[in-house]
Amino acid sequence: MGRIEESVEVDAPIDAVYREWTEYRAVPLCMRGGAEHGAAATEVIPQDRIAWDGGPDLSGHSGVVTFHRVTDRTSRLMLQLDTEPHGLWDHLVEGLGFTDRRIIDVLAAFKEQVEHGGSGGAGGSGLAA
Image 1 (cartoon, rainbow, N blue to C red):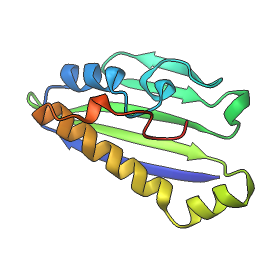
Image 2: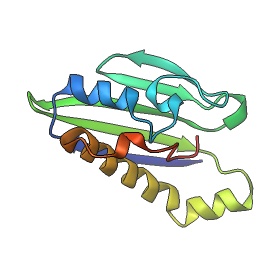
Image 3: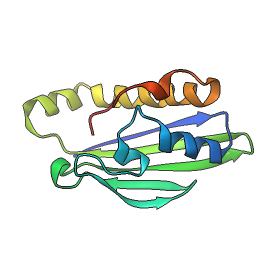
Image 4: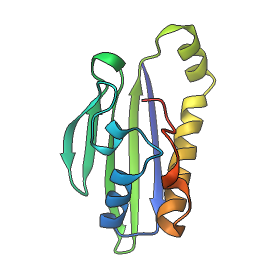
């Protein structure tokens, strides 16, 4: 099982960061607190954390995103994702670090969206759920 842990500091208050995350379409719905492809949120504490499990369609996949107040105008979003590769292709993708890179890119785009109102929220699924 692979574990990815990444974080991003966003120049916005925690309530705005949480609200944007729950609406940000570049991450799977399950990571925003909804259900997707059999995955479901296992814990949702507004402005604090969202945890999910991949369910039967994505066994071995789970994660949590937490929201941390740094200052009144700055927040930190921390993402922990546990994945279990299935098959040769998944092992190769994970072994080469493509999943880590994709997470970093999504968090950077999210930061840009929140801070500057960029087009990051208009994207598709971004990550395979």
